Length: 468
Figure 1 (cartoon, helix red, strand yellow):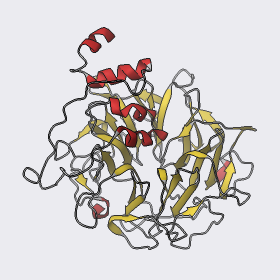
Figure 2 (cartoon, rainbow, N blue to C red; figure 1 turned 120 degrees about the vertical axis):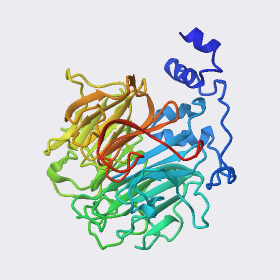
Figure 3 (tube, helix red, strand yellow; figure 1 turned 90 degrees about the vertical axis):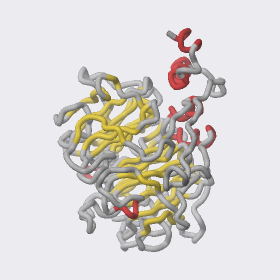
């Protein structure tokens, strides 16, 4: 099989890339590239794309802090999408041209669109041009943030709790730059993660109110902004003054800056991070002591997570998790979760993700949690999901809850993906053929098609241009 692929590499570059991943070929391996179709221009489409930047392998590699597949993204010739986020009622992607496209949620002029038909639309900047130079996108509630290749962060959408981080509480339908508490542009950011806010009621659109975002800097420090009702900003305070509109540095419980962080995860009402030594630190909402602490008080600053008397050591966390629980991956590529995991009762300490035979699921390379469901990628790039399934968000063709991971298929074939993201009630994935698939709740077009009933199998999201 490998000999055949190598002889016909020019016909199967994506398969060759996967073959290279499987046998561990070095990143510099020369692999034939697909001829990219010509970009759409103003002559054949109203969106002018020709002047936008195309992602480079070094840019894409920066996203591999969460997704190791992207360490070899330069081998995946022809892939058009490299970062994905799913929220309550919409999803967004970063394209190979470093643009951000979003779909779903009729109210979302602030998210890049204004329709229920699910058609993806590009996010525009203040000049009316397509917002570009994006590397990563993250969302929750009704706001979106993007990390640019220059290390700055830009956000748009609802802003009543300072979710945009621009020093105001004014909503914005165009990206605005995040500012820190020193009134300087937040810079040198290498990863971002957004979480929702548990128990803050609903906004005027009927969706959960309030969210927060955290940024990991190159120096290993973490900075957060937005809602702080439960101490999820980790700045030593726990109060919701209405606006926490400037990025503030996360502290440890001894009031020293949290440092040496390599991975962050933002969830409903709480945030967690992994240090270089693998230890896990969490702050924010802590009902039932589910972060492994003896007490159940909320945490105003980062504290070291204890796993039933022993330190929990992880390799990295799933970035944005709109859930009352958090999941991460150990060095042995097993996945572990803690918090309110589907049962409605807190689990103190971490529990391994197991299959229907009770064995640890592995090797896992990526994990993403929604409000009541979770999906992961195995090393063979297969997608597995489990949890509450009333909206079909597990994606296995049923509406039955699943207590253990089930394999997701696209028609008769196994869905192979480089990214999977679990939203509140829907899920999206980027497959190996550079297509985006979504499943679950579709009440406002978040599956990339006209709003209507929930769909329990992957549905293709159709973009209005060949190379967005």
